[in-house]
Image (cartoon, rainbow, N blue to C red; front, top):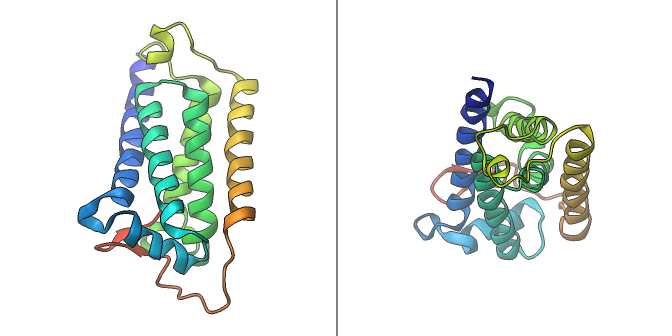
Length: 179
């Protein structure tokens, strides 16, 4: 029963993360160009490239978490992309999501970290293939890789301006929340 509970955590968190990635890349919502403009308004250099990187990372990490596949790597991707979202798009808005805050990125990164430590469980691709990795070492490595990647990307590509539009960091496309 415990493993079914893990699926009930992994599947929706992973699926919602995939949805965020698809939104960033969707032509209906302006695709990477429109999303990239929002990224540039937040202070990212090469906004369209950053939009593709964020979208692809969210899709890959979401699929991995939902399926329990390459779980430590999937969790690292989720931690990294959500750390970037929290640090750029949401930090000026406080904690709560109803104010545009970093609540959602914090929850996703925390769930991903917990899954990296615990492991995806018996009902997972990792377990079925005999590649399940878990424990504090794997979880710590996963979180370190995610946070390290986020900090490296922020250092290399993020240059917030003093003239930043505080509303630019809230929406992408047709009112789709960024993060």
